[in-house]
Image (tube, rainbow, N blue to C red):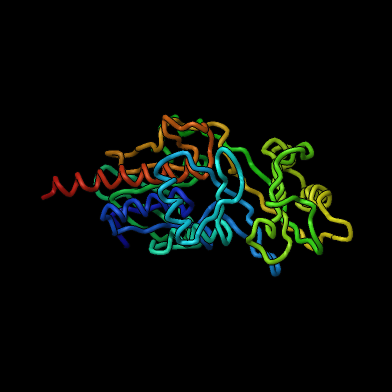
Length: 328
C-alpha cells in the first residue's frame, strides 16, 4: 500500500496551488489524484479541428498581492497576457487556460484518470484513501479540493455542517467552429446586450489562442438549471441559435460541441479559505467556494480558488512542521 505525507484530491487550480505551496515549504512526499485525463479543472481548453476553445474560465482578475506577484512572473515567462478590461485587467493564458494549469503543475506528481470513492479517518494510524478500482493509499494529511457536494460524498460523517450549505449552479457551454468570420468585436469577448439566458460569448481567434474561428457561448446558471433535463441535441441546438447571431455575412457554423459544468459557480460561499475536519484536523477542504474574510468580490472565481489553495497548503505545511518538531 502506497503511503504519502499528503494526498491532494483534485487537480484544479486550488489543488495545484496547495501542492505548489507545500513543495515550497519543503513537503515533497505528495501525490495528487485527479479523476480527469488532465489537470486544470475549470481551466479547460478543447481542441476542435485546427482550432481550440476555452470552455471553463475565460480569464481572471487580480485583487490580491499574492496573485499580482505570480501574474508578473507568469507574464515574464510568456504564460499569461493582459486581454482586456478596466479598472481590473482581465488576464488570460497565452495558449489556452488549460495550458496555464499544466505549466503550473509541471513538477507535481499526479495520478490521472483516477477516482476516489472514500476517505477513512480512523483515530489511530494514517488516513486511508480508497480509489474506485479498489486500491488504497494512505497519508498523514489530505487536502480535498473537489466541489463541496462531491467532497461530501467522500467525507461521510466527517464534514462539518457548514460545508453542506455550499451549493452550485450549473453552466452549459456551447463550442462552435465557424467557416468564415464572427461579428464579435475585438478583443473577442461580449457580455453585454446578449439574449436572455446568455452570460458571455467569446471568439477564440480574436482572443489569440486559436488558429481558426471557434466561438464559445456560455449560458447562465438559471438557464442551465431550467434546461438540465433537456436532451443534449436540443440544448446544443438552442445555444447554436445564439452563436448563429454572430455570423458574418457568408459565414456558417460547421461544428458544435457541448460542455455541461455541473458545479460551475457557488451560489453560497464560506467566509474562510479552508475548513479542517477529521481527527486532529488532518483533512482540509478548500476550493473556489472558500473565500478569505477580506475577499472584495464575494464570489467564486479563479482568484478565490488560487488563494484558498495557498491557504490550505500553508496550513498543512504548518501542521506537518509541528508534528516533525514534536517527534524530534
